[in-house]
Amino acid sequence: MLNWTQKLTLAAALTVGLSPLATFAQQADAPAAEAAVDQATGTVTGKIVLPDEVPDWFHGGKLDPSSAVVVLEGRFERPPVPFPDGYKEMSREEKAAWQNEFMQSEAYKEYMAKMAEAYNNRPRIEVKVNADGSFKAENLKPDTYMVTAAIPHANADKSRLAYHSWASSSGKLQVLANGNTDLGDMEMELMNIVMPGDTAPEWTAKTYDGKQIKLSDYRGKFVLLDFWATWCGPCKAEIPNLEAVYKDFGGEKFEMVGLSLDSEIDKPRQFHEEHHSPYVHGYLGEWNKTETTARDYGVIGIPSIWLIGPDGKVVARDLRGEKLREAVRQAVQGQESQALAN
Image (tube, rainbow, N blue to C red; front, side, top):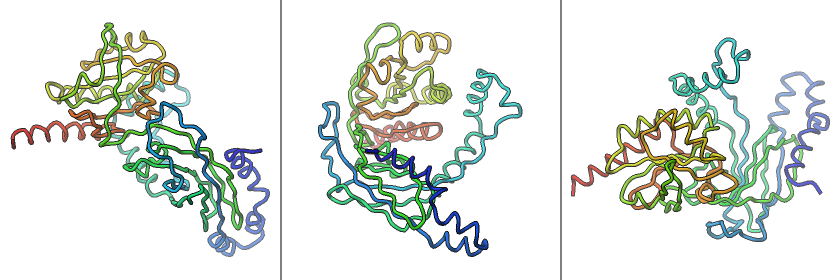
């Protein structure tokens, strides 16, 4: 029996040959063909299926299919990356150097703004899931969609549904005109989710000089956590920004901790011997083998940067660039203003 993602692949492969609209459009005049495309729609059905057993590491609440949603997101046109002349002929090291420089430039901010605008304007259809896990999306314009089924955290950002949900499943789908695509069972994968207002999970890490540190050591301060690794280009590109934020705000009320997810402690240790950073650094262990902290926080991509409050609760997550600086500024200066008022 095919699983739902295999069904999607098969449907996409057969689309060109089986779609009656394709043949019709070739034979009809252009205006009539376009009108037919506008009127023809497709339907998608399926059913979400939760795991039979909940693992010990999962800290979520009740997994109720009736609180789930299914979202179908259409394609959007990405802005072209302003690669320099001769980029294809560059060595791997030269490309990495250009990427690091580009990610620190105004051109990168402009590129990401265009990317965000295109993404936010993409087609997006949200479908409610029935109590038995079944769902039906109707009147869909023929296109390729990313379909995501999820049981979201109460404070989930809808634009990041797959990252802010206790259970999810996703894949690409080709919707055919005047046809029904049955996804069958969508098996949901569980993930811990920690959102602003939640208590940040405790962790313990080893510093590069052999000491042990833990989150509770910083209770009473704001602490910025940066999950990163030496093999992660965007992580290293963010370090100058982190250092600048620490220089401006680090001290009695604010601390910063880099948490390495490298396979060996020698890799981040050597990196910081060559590129010293003024804030605290610790080693957690290889992401998917030895350490549970990334799983407790629901980290599935790095850099993953979090701001934790003096009370141990999450203030903000998914911080990068100016968003990072602004979150720290508001937190630290807000606390100072409150202290003066009292």
